[in-house]
Image (cartoon, rainbow, N blue to C red; front, side, top):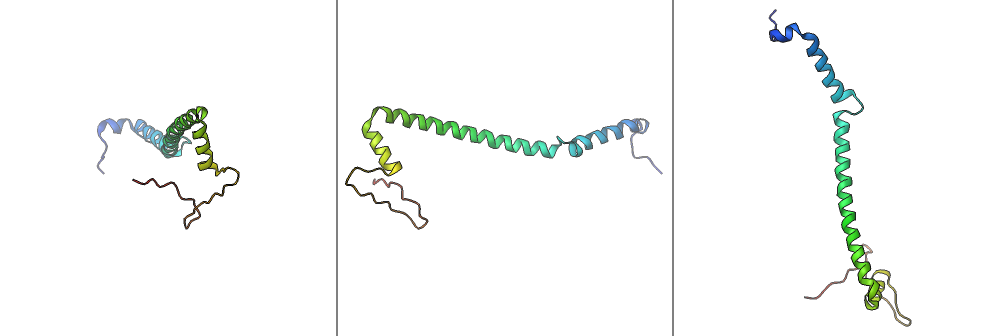
Length: 109
């Protein structure tokens, strides 16, 4: 029978099998294997994208807050649009689509 291993590996089979065992252990068997590392990397990238989303939303909210702090007309508009507040004697009608969601403002061009 002919040996298919090069002469160097024939003399050092222990190192070949030890290295192969190490790769299999780290890649598949170990608790921090490559599959788990891939899942954790995916979760990390998802959390990073959520962080950037919430940072952008925080900037928008702070801008709206600064805008509302000094302007009573803007504060009244905000309360009417977002919380359906009304003055005494007024009636507020909310139009809904087929799904029960209120329509957003449609700006005329």
